[in-house]
Image 1 (tube, rainbow, N blue to C red):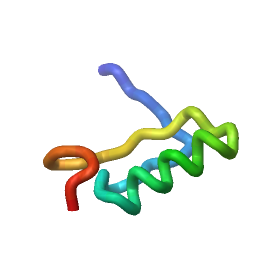
Image 2 (tube, rainbow, N blue to C red):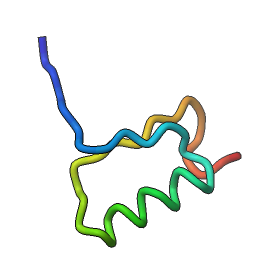
Image 3 (cartoon, rainbow, N blue to C red):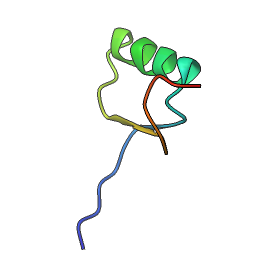
Length: 43
């Protein structure tokens, strides 16, 4: 079993989710995942 751990899980890859991911990168947080069912950036 391969288990991965993340500091932050962003649920949704729409405009808000992508914005949060960008803010996390600017804050120096790199251990996160964006979970999306469809195309990232769609709403």
